[in-house]
Amino acid sequence: MQLLAVGLNHMTAPLALREKVAFPADQIGQAVTSAREWFGQTRDGGLISGLPDEAAILSTCNRTELYAASHGVGDVAAAIDRSAHFLAHYHQLPYADLRPHLYTLPQDSAVRHAFRVASGLDSMVLGEPQILGQMKDAVRQADAAGGLGTYLHQLFQRTFAVAKEVRSHTEIGAHSVSMAAAAVRLAERIFDTIADQHVLFIGAGDMITLCATHFAAHNPRSLTIANRTLERGEELALQFNGQAIRLADLPDHLARFDIVVSCTASSLPIIGLGMVERAIKARRRKPMFMVDLAVPRDIEAEVGRLADVFLYTVDDLGAVVQSGVENRQAAVVQAESIIETRVQSFMHWMDTRAMVPLIQDLQECGEALRQIELERAKKMLARGEPIDAILESLSKGLTAKFLHGPQQALHQAQGDERTRLARLLPQLFRTKR
Image (tube, rainbow, N blue to C red; front, side, top):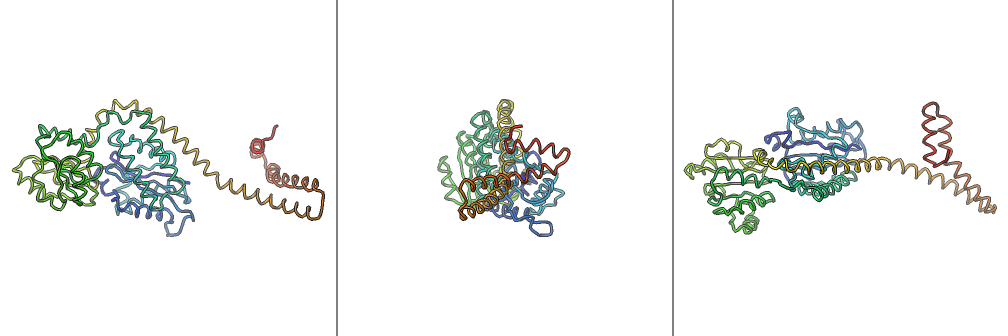
């Protein structure tokens, strides 16, 4: 079994590339199915094995990762190479452009990575809790698409348990500065006080809810939610005594806002250069602070070139969220220790699972030998032979058949192989020497 993780994140790839490799939420199931089919075929289109491969895809603003358990023939390097080619093929990107930014993690490295990601150790915001929920969503989608089998199901169940253990027994989340809090800090650098500003949030998901919570704490002059579904926007706005508008009406309202925070699941930008230029003109060059937390981006990158616009992306917020890292180093050490112990436990489970086919073969062989001797004993019983003689014959026959293979192997072996068998057989049969 080849267990692996292949992906890129905020540390290995720029935002411009990450947004090209991101999977829209409504395409995750289809992508999981495509990945399984990709792993299950040889380069000439034939099937590698009759066993289905397992796959799950995690796609967030900071990372895109493919987790796989492959039954195919070949070494781990070949399986990793096929995974990397899948990402390039699916997104129609040149493999040579994508490959340098990918991390490729086999076996225990893949397990360790999954545990670290879920625990918040691999996040831009060290210890942030949102990634665990995103991983659980990804696993549910993979399961619905038939991507989870014995190995990935067990991996992710243990991943969630490890994340819970880390958060329960360490202070990894203490002193954490979230992306939402970082956005507030940056806004305070532009404006003297947020209380005098009109704030717009585009989208109505978890990240926007978190950002709205942080900004609302500063009592802005007004708070507005723009969403494709007006009802969902109104529901969120009600929590903050704000108002809601339709996303389609945004061009007519954008000029009213001093602070704009956007995070939607759109695959294309929803705020273009022309829209912002018109808004700035209507504002008579009054500054506008914009935060784009979406991947792919909601706001065209060219907007950042405008003199009166301060545009920040998820990567731009990275320096801000690093504050407090020193205070969490002791917790990181504790978390890494927990994770390492759990990685070894999982790999032991995988090794045990690898022995299952051999154990099944032994059981089937033993059952076949038992049936042979049982049938012989029944025939003796039918002939009226004494029961003691039948039991004696049955026991001797079973013993002889079970010992025949090991004895023959020991007689035929020579040199080091015979020495190895001589040491192994007493352990298997628990004999005293």
